[in-house]
Image (spheres, rainbow, N blue to C red):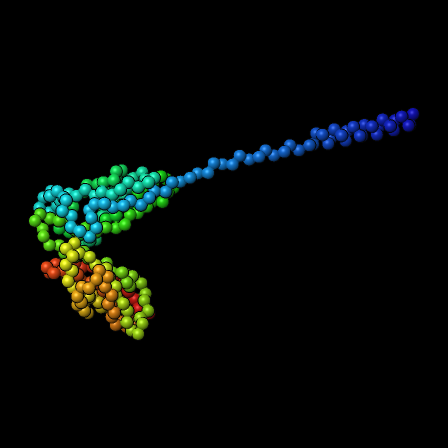
Length: 245
């Protein structure tokens, strides 16, 4: 009797062990499905076409004694949903922005004044805007034959920057252009207060001009350039400043 009872118990243990192994077997993890890659199409920068760069704009409609309307045009960029035109009056430095869903926009402006403009292409959400080059033009008024130079662009020293004089000298640099192509001279003003002190008058030689001038260390200087054409028309660059080490 003892032998039979012992055999029955051992058989039961083996059977239970096998069932336990089968019931606790792990199920393999399914292979995750990769998420689709999101591709954001970037807009291309527009190319400006009208009004022409550095020229008087004669193709305008006179609205009244002080204003004319002009149609800005540019090419259609890739992956673009809308455009933003930025327009700056180079006399008042006032800047306005306009939105267009097409590649042209008609605006009414004060004539006989210089302007700068650019167009930014706006694409789908998540894309980066793409900006065109900046062009300048002079909006012609009725029977206007002579145009003042575009205000000079002061390029060096950068306004608000700190420079180290070499031998007590710094270089002033600016770019200039004129719709009539009759630039004649520049008057350069610089001092430590308000850029009203005339330091030199030089003839126009090229669109980029460099002038060396003496400065003192540890000072803040204010400077500006007045461009003059052959007819005596003038334009003021506005005041820039820099600090010397």
